[in-house]
Image (cartoon, rainbow, N blue to C red):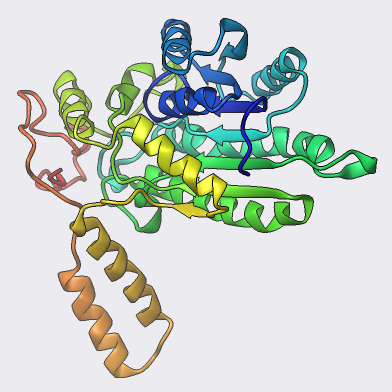
Length: 336
């Protein structure tokens, strides 16, 4: 997809962080943009920022406040966007996400339901709701001329490896990657495309996600406090700028890239990816030498980049379990 002017974009999580950066950039490229969030106040501020950055008008930005895991609400929002903008999106970008840190063995059903609900289920919802509409409108069906269309999702470098302190998130992002690979193959015959964006760290407010966890999903096994949230925010403050990240995504969509990894990822992340994929290759072989090499690599593999951040007071147990879970080793706190 190369021509964006006059077309329609639908961006989840578009009121802040990576989603807002995408909304700004694609609005500046001439698109009408629908943005979603569960926070009405954030949507209001985002509309003003998008207009100021892109030079578009208020009529070109549609804020939609709803829960992306609610399929009826998502369908109603899709209907509203189609009605107001005159058709389904040419570009669907699903970026909304949440995360929390803690030992996977301390995770509760609520931890999995919340993180995977937002990070994976919402992507499934959007694809099932929108893709048929996009194919009917732009895929050359029933004699209708073809138009370019594309689906995209914001994933993570964490999609390529497990994480003992980010189990639900890593599992969700890995599934998102696989979904987007599948849709890339499926949409090609209709003239559509698919891209998954995999950054290492984004300057966003995802560190505050726990503040907006639904009441019915608050039974967490993780240690959560003001200090842990402040620490996570300090980590994300050093991430890639959302506009810069959106530029990488736009270039990837224009050039038909299925996977987009922003250049300049820390060398530790690159080594971790290499180690991870080399281990997978070794597992596919059965010779004694290969197995020995695999075990050595697993013992010496690089971990996520660590250190360099001041730990705020109250965040000493960041990444740890709730104190009352007596089966958890208290020393089992990943250092981020």
